[in-house]
Image (cartoon, rainbow, N blue to C red; front, side, top):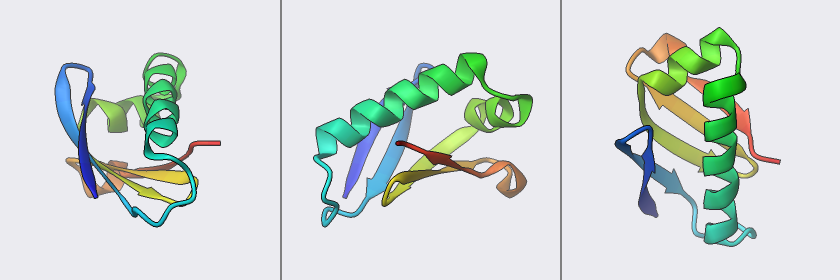
Length: 79
């Protein structure tokens, strides 16, 4: 399943499996709050990844953040 979220005035596609046990709205709320917090308070490597974010993939309780540079892609725990 694909949903677009607005992050830092950019529409970012979020891909996730619909078989997940967590409700979609709860997962998206956790994701957006974690992204906003990490954007302002995270380490420099994470901030660099978030500034060039192109897509997000949810796998279980982790969000895989894909950026323009494959070396900047990271995994972020949602729980």
